[in-house]
Image (tube, rainbow, N blue to C red):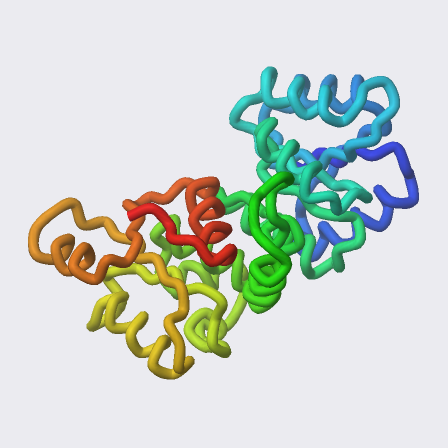
Length: 269
């Protein structure tokens, strides 16, 4: 694995090298202290697997640097590392094509888990950004309080698992990506929302949703992910009037549906 670290602070780059050793002990790490050097390294190393980019880089602002990377290397995942935790910055970075946004206040384990998700093809979004409402969204104080309460129940690890479920991975495959025990995927307290694969072991996701709602004692918001395109299975899903998404689900689509459910609205059918 080959990773390019783009940050103008040598001390931060040094600390990052230690954390990235947990991601892959044999990873080859390249470093750049300004945007021009970062782009030059990316041009000369077409086998790069990942770029970690600070938004505040000498010679070019981070937004321009991100757009330049996306233009010149459209298939190369670029993850933003930033001191900012502003949800607006997160949305702007993802809108410009970043594969993730990791606040510099994150722990080493959070960073490693986020990068594993990105390297598996997902998009990492900080929990705070998922919990925040977009600027100008309607809603009174009570709705905002309920939204924060629901969102606070989803941990970063739960969001990572949900993203991989949406991509159609099995429990065992998710464990391999995130390096967790299989029970971690299946177990947990009453969730803020449910994303269930229709094909789930010997039963269906519909049965799992009913069981979770029964255990929680409330109508937990739920969405069904399915590869079914017709027949009795799809009719069964539609009969429940639950929102459903067709596999493979783009990460942006899953985020939008989860945000709508956490705000108390109804996801699209």
